[in-house]
Length: 269
Image (tube, rainbow, N blue to C red):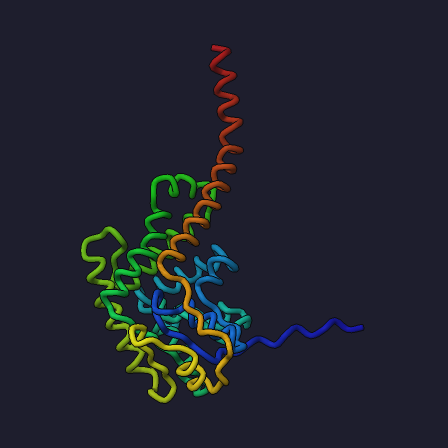
């Protein structure tokens, strides 16, 4: 018998350009319910890991600081596993527009929110991760666990993409807000209105708007409302704790022989 053919690579059908903390986890879950295979930062962190975070960091830095467009081959990066992606396009918007705007079959979604509330949400969530991975103990443990280094690098690249500053630097919140406003206007000015679903988080949205735009029947399930600040921080705390414990075990294995030799030499002296 011949080996079964590998599945054909998926083509991108939906691009959700919403920035982080703009209902992206709900949109990601909603697309899965509708039968899509979407990619979200959740997949990057919990499924793919450090190598994908490195590639995202490289692409953000290439577009933001060197003006390189396209900054990456997104199709190659997604490896044909997904037919939609959520949030990731906002990291390198010019590259995303360059790659998918020419395809008239790709549909676009942009969910916006009040800029001041967006900054407040980021400071209590994404910035919380950055601070956790930049703390002294995390930097020390990063010597034996590359996860901390990968997180710190991609988050620094992410914040510098949104205004050029990282948490703790002067004016970082003001830069975030102005960059966010510019970004939303960029997307709305480039994507034709008939291919863009523009949503407002404060107005509320759900199945009716999304299913009408994507030409899908409305599911029986309630529209997902998940990943509030408390849930986000609990998830992060659990993940950081797992990596800290793992790193401490590795460090103990490395240091035990050193302490043993030092103790032996001490008693010989």
